[in-house]
Image (cartoon, rainbow, N blue to C red; front, side, top):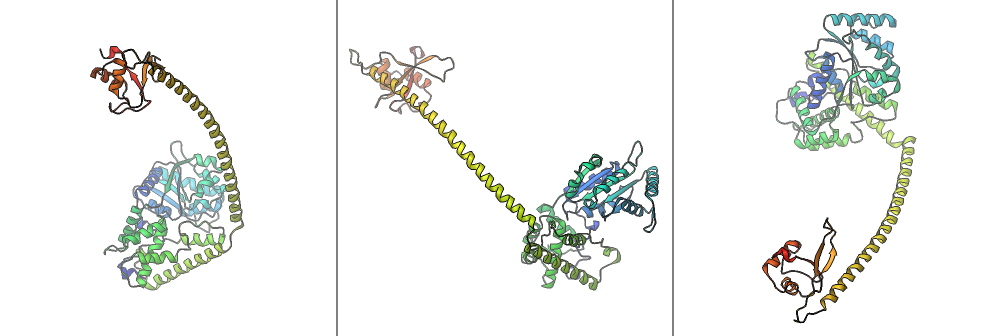
Length: 481
């Protein structure tokens, strides 16, 4: 509909898993290489997991067409089958049976084993790919494990790739599937695109579609698309497609932020990233939308305008259905949601009570510690006052020559000295200077004595600045003779 307007050869953002549009980011390239390695090296079971819309199906289609893999592929895209139906579908994909042929399980297994043995003799491979494998029940998965037992002494004859959403991992954690899990030789995971890869993804699809003009999506428009889509490629496709359609309707050949904002407003009630809702009918609607058949328009030429317009109308109808279902869901809150909210309230109340109890215990502990600390502080204060009183008494004694001196320097045990030796310490009186102290103690203010005193009192940075009641270590006479 808008292809001619923008100069596209084909529509760039269809929701079909066309491998021709595959954009290989660093992570996706690594996943593709890992799967290719697992098939060539015959690793048996391989697991591919990713959120909906992250490109698993497109990647699988690219894997099937990938050069360098000599193998026959059986691609199962409808996993809602029991094991017998699944086995029959595999034979049909390998061209070993017809859809209306009636085969017993024994005949089907024998036919499959004969085929894979012949492939092995030709140095070829047989690969079974099950897409949306989270739809398989536990019994079918367990029987699927039996196919991996088709092997020789040296190699696996059948390689099986299970691809599905993260819930597939939960299913595989069931105790009945322990043996199957033990046989999974490789595990891969697709991730949403980061901002840089999202921009390159948009440009890549435009280029594949045949666009050669200036940058079609403005920078702010691309940022809004990446932010709203959370990097999910399928959501990016839907937003870009809707934006191009809106731009076409407004005769705008450049998609700016205002157009994308309008698209976001239109889709605001439609969560395009996850579709986890309780209504089974709504889930079926989403599943049908996500499993659109592969578009082969590039093989048969350009789609006619009438057909293109019809496709756009169907897409709009799908969006309207989604919006209506969501409105119904929001209007009636499930009972389970109310129970979860009620439980969350009680958990919050209990957590609050636990926090208050911890605070009370901490308060008691701190109070006890504070009392113990205060008593020790008072004891230290009393001891210091007693020593200070002794110093003052000794200072009041004057010799016959009128010069004040100490009968005996104050001696204390210094805890900072490891050998517990005793040091001479003097307490500074109000208004005293270092030279005055040296005159009082040693009878002279010799520079050598001053240097020795400063050396053993490194806390004195300025000789002219000492304060009252400061404790100063006195050097021995041998230190400056």
